[in-house]
Image (tube, rainbow, N blue to C red; front, side, top):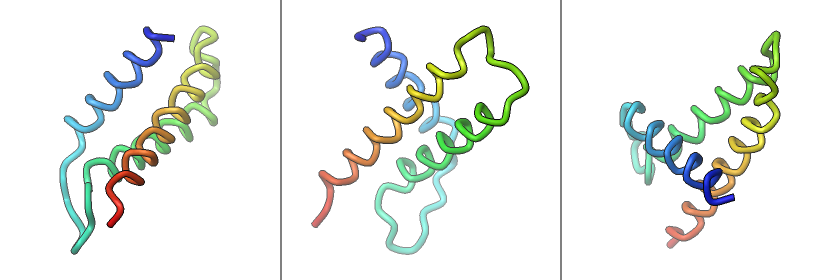
Length: 80
């Protein structure tokens, strides 16, 4: 479990580093929202992939769902 969480945080950090910040007017935390979109993109790619990536496709989709959920939780803590 600890290894999986470390992997999720590493994925999140990578997504933040690679995602250009283009904030919409008044949007809070544009990098987090961009990371959420990138995660959904990755999940869609995996869902439509022609193979199972050595048996890791399903686990990767679960990790994406968990990372997306954690980002939603982060945003909930910043509500005014």
